[in-house]
Amino acid sequence: MITWRAGVVESVGPTWPGASELRVALDEPWADPSLPARVKALAYPELVGTLAVGDRVLLNVSALARGLGTGGYALVVAPDGRLPGDGPAGPGHLVKARYTPLQTMVLGVDDQESEFHEVLRDADDLRGMPVVVADLHSALPAILAGVRHAASRPLRVAYVMTDGGALPAWFSRAVAGLREAGWIESCITTGQAFGGDLEAVTVHTGLLAAKHVVGADLAIVAQGPGNLGTGTQFGFSGVAAGEAVNAAVVLRGRPVASLRVSGADERERHLGVSHHSLTAYGRVAMRPADVPVPVFDGELSRLNELVADQVSYLQVMHRLFDVPAGAELRAALAATPVRLSTMGRGLDQDPASFLAAAVAGVHAASLLG
Image 1 (cartoon, rainbow, N blue to C red):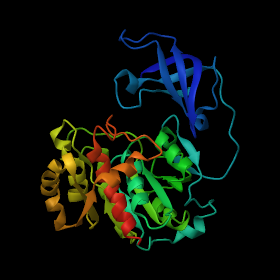
Image 2: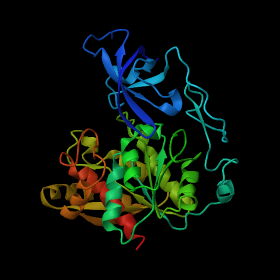
Image 3: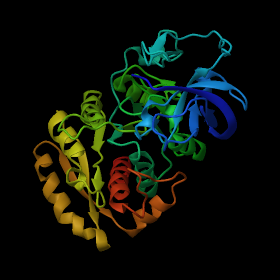
Image 4: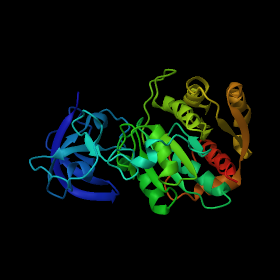
């Protein structure tokens, strides 16, 4: 059941490609009087048009009302009483967010109407391209920091965004900042996700587009912002990381499985190597991958024995590589152009998390010489 509210735009705040932050005064109070009468709301102009101060808007506040992970935003469903104009007619017949009230039409890179259809129609080979796979969106800038730290030459990197988290790529300030800084060449949205530089039907065509359309040297596959988990062995959106490993091997790429590690998470199942990584790579992935294992120094070295023990059974199928995760790599992380944050913790609060992702980037870069 959707929890609805309507209100008036009082101010327009920060904007970034594809998204606009608003301050909205609500018409009706909440059932919980402790919740505010004014809320931050996020609008996607491609879906709802451009909004200004004084406009009335219809909001979905379901997750906000329950304190769930929408970044503290209500989401603008539509202008209230004023329809946006029709967009320009164009090619493309892929429908994403299908059969929801905000389903949207896009031109897929693999669509018959796409200029790249002939390139992708029979493409089935990544030609050994490294494919770094991660559970969380927060790993993306850390992996890139590792790539850039270790690469012997400038590399073209494509981000292949799956649909386990946010569906609109526009929700991610990290993607906007990384594109602006030139750290990623292209964002390719796959499955039900949309709003990337290129749209693809599946992770497979997303990876093939990264190689044959973008000309990427390396691809990173991860879900958009947000993560769904139920505290059960298989009930979490990150199981898709194992399927991405399978896709990379089927397409003759070189999968690199980034481990989700934490030295600060209070939940035992996520301390050291998260059970998400152990399940995705140990049970869901059916083909071998490279698994870079961080070797910490200093105060974090207390985690090394635990991490080594947790990943030991992965070597039955996968190739494990010890990769130093020391001060130089941490300095590279500190220089990222976007904020590092995972589960509300930054680099200083949980350095192991970002270092573990960064060593995957280091290893992937080493495969390219």
